Length: 181
Picture (spheres, one colour):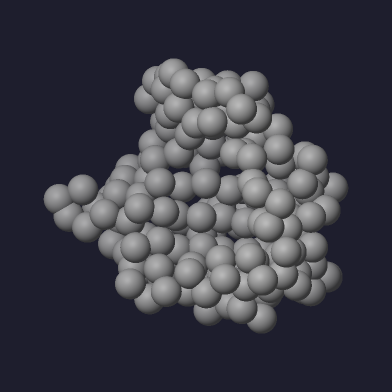
């Protein structure tokens, strides 16, 4: 599925994105290492990215996860961001865990907020979601700002929540409640 916002093209997982996705993660390897778990060397191979996209497509077909990749309308062949909604849970929870990242060179223009807002609207319809949860590293001010702009509410601290760079790091916990559920 492909849809557009004012400045972006957003699409769900498709193996046709394999080379673009490999370039995206390879170009941002050092930058993402500050905020994400360490990935094995094979992560940065075409085969691994293709297999990941195939898994994402199966998960979307089963409605257990949803994945979105976005590009600028001016440069549709270059992925500049990734959005994921994992662990989709049906009622009585009707919840999902939300994450995102964006190419280092494209930060500060509001692209991530624009893409996330559109993806949230889509996943709410796709999976009938009431609650979206997210974690943000305590030193990631840009992500805190995105959470606030999207209307997420700070719920507290998660101590030692995620292994990043060999250390379990603290994260802020945020949530957004769908008022139209």
